[in-house]
Length: 209
Ligand SMILES: [Fe+2]
Image 1 (cartoon, protein in one colour):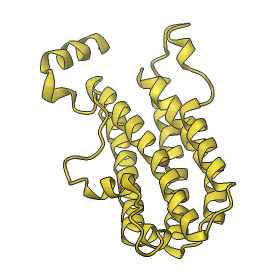
Image 2: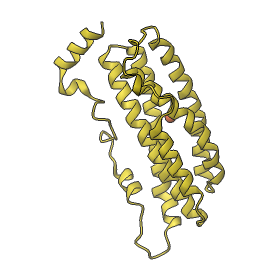
Image 3: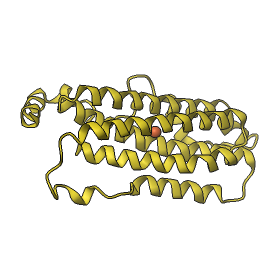
Image 4: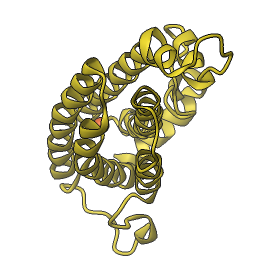
């Protein structure tokens, strides 16, 4: 399952690298453009990090045919999120509204990645693969940072500019994101396994050996 998550994330990062230039092109706000450009560089580093992890994990070959249905070439989850984003960006709308919409699309992508990295990190931790766990945590922290920056951009400026004066229409999702306090970050359900079941952790470690 760890290998499957790594493959899925690798495909997701590849698709994001292909999709980001169009989002950068479409964004009008200078800070949003810069945030997306910076994220493209971060994504390229994350892809290289996954490459290293893949090499490490291949030292332990998977059983032939084991979970083969999960090892599809392309991450369909990310494909869908990107297609949804492209659909939104193909619409005619005020540039301020487009910026707010781009943030919304980018955050859906970020949240998918946060879930994937959180889960993969938890698996690596349970398997006692500390170097892999550390690398995955680095990427996870970068995803959180990008997500927080997008929330800040949206709530501080972009959503206000996209909302007609006097209107009560607001982007609820971004406001909820802004209210997220430290320690209540988005986590996959399996990101903190040790807190809940230490005996399960011990058993899995012994199986992995
Ligand atoms: Fe990423």
